[in-house]
Length: 112
Length: 117
Image 1 (tube, rainbow over the protein chains, first blue to last red):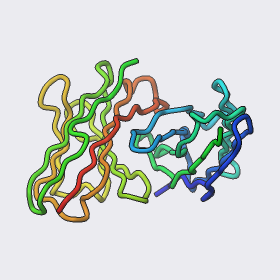
Image 2 (cartoon, chains in turn blue, orange; image 1 turned 90 degrees about the vertical axis):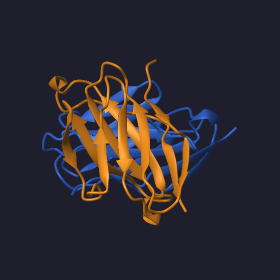
Image 3 (cartoon, chains in turn red, green; image 1 turned 30 degrees about the horizontal axis):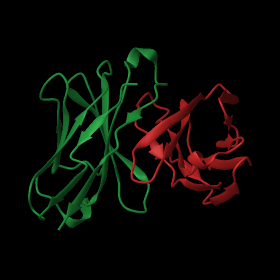
Image 4 (tube, rainbow over the protein chains, first blue to last red; image 1 turned 90 degrees about the horizontal axis):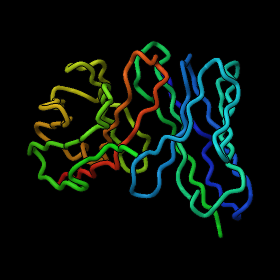
């Protein structure tokens, strides 16, 4: 089965800097989604990019998708202390089912 | 903004006991899901539910697990005879109608931490 897999990074950056994290997956998809999880909380949906899209923006977030390489990146610009969280990519089944396959997550710490 | 709510936030249960985890999905959503996250591991899909029946389930979702939508608002996950390895954070999620296509974001609750002793 397919899985989202982030690069196993723990990022520690200064407030105002940009944070980039990557994700790769193994099979065909309809879409790829990025989620944020604050400690002890649920997953918050950030952005969804469809398989026929290459780039998408939402506020300070920029997501790219390269289906030929089966990879995606999430860029957070001008980071804030409140961006401190774990970030997960998730892919759907690509077969019409809605189940999400999550990666291991990237821990991002933004230092004020 | 509407949100998915889950109760309880933390459930401690003796091994072998039955446990029911409860969720109230977003009111106009029609697809419902359960996921779990064992400490330090990935979030794993358990089951999806639509039109009062299971749409898909993973290999984790064995005969010990069941889901139900007992009324118009609640969505429950039952584990009949809990095992130590069922200890995890359980997340409920919901998404809008399927007719929007397979590109609907899923909205998650804050989870129930299940501890099996």
